[in-house]
Image (tube, rainbow, N blue to C red; front, side):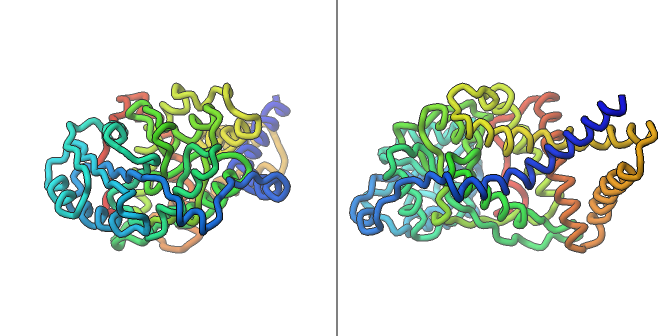
Length: 387
């Protein structure tokens, strides 16, 4: 019995350490020897031969930011005759459509509310570009972002490319604990770059990404493109790559409580992809990519239960008379919980990081509960403070 408890404890702790730290370290070592960079064209060739591009912005009640977004799209360093800007209004009840037209959008679709994915589907059906790119209404692209992103498709193996989104601080969080997402996001982007160099990314982001129009896939409306498109592209024999030179910025959710709510909502859309969207099926995956999906996605989403198993096994071991080592491991787990609790009122960096970790680790469990209890709607409202 005690041996089984020890196996349970160390296996759970080891898998937590692997998905959060060991996986990234292993990628860094492998990338030194086995990197597969996309075949990027020379800069002069990329400047002279550009494919036509449709930039699609799905928007729900975005009158406050949509004109700025359209102007940002019009200012891209890309031949204006090759770019069309499409704003897909998802059941807007405000002046989003009118302001998008006034700002210079080529096509403005006024749709019944069906969610972001269905708005994007409708826009792709109207798009004329060889490449279809997507962005959020509150994301601002750097002038060269479109050229950098589109450059990835010079490699015929590439079906999906995402850029780098940089978060800027939003309005002060008031009495709430300030968001620590920026620290995690920098690490996540480093891992994403390594995945891209070795094989393909396991997830993208909604602020700046693109596909070939011929490779675009219609997915379930509750299954976001960020997670669904990369692995589905790989199953088709294409690569999903990260282009860090293609940069966009958007405002961060200001508080940790708001970040937890955002991640909880995201996870209620993630679990349908994991459990019935094809992610768990290894069919079509190269072996290395299957290990990436397991390490970076599946184990990451299972972290709350791994922590629960580690804690339960630790307590049971102590009850069975285990030695001082297990008192130390229990103390470390309780210290993390206490630091997270204190981080709600004491603004010290270590405490805030502990609180961020505990809340974001809990979000997959909360999101699964939401999905199982009442399902997941295809639409959602913007996170507070990001506009």
